[in-house]
Length: 116
Length: 111
Image 1 (spheres, rainbow over the protein chains, first blue to last red):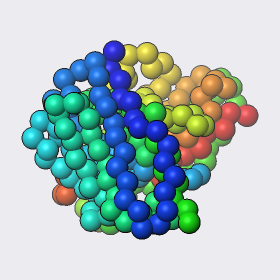
Image 2: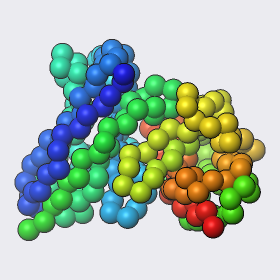
Image 3: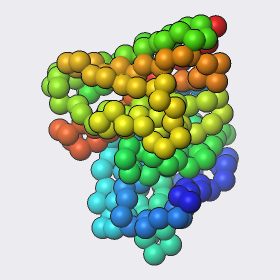
């Protein structure tokens, strides 16, 4: 069974750094792109970027380029989303999703709250 | 900037059919392809309903279908059921910069 399991909810202060994770199982992690999607409170889905764990080829939405860093460690079947300088406006739910036929499997989401 | 425009809301009664549109508003009309559709129930992760080539994943009802005309893709739900009440998002690939983009989402209310 394909599963993507994300790390737990985080509460951070503005200016802090953060890494959240997405661990895949039930398939060959290296062979499928993993995308990250943001959902602001009460708002729609925003595509942030995507990585191919096999060779770490990474693409970013222009809106998120330079704001976050996407990485992956294929040896432990895990993708990451990193912030170096969190802002209150980063408060959102973040989803990872596997790019198979469409974005066919999704993580459960990680709630990130940034507040002073 | 490239974008996909969806109506904010649609509604229908049980048993009826509804259609949700998704229009490419990029200046490079027709550059989008590989449209897929997602359902998001309140408090849940999105779920793939239709993927490229109008295909349905295993387990998705055949009441869900899509079509495309020019720069507009459309999701049709026939035989509307109360459980279909959710937000629906289209998603497409933008080959110009090898990125993906979601539409703004449409809230479906089943009356």
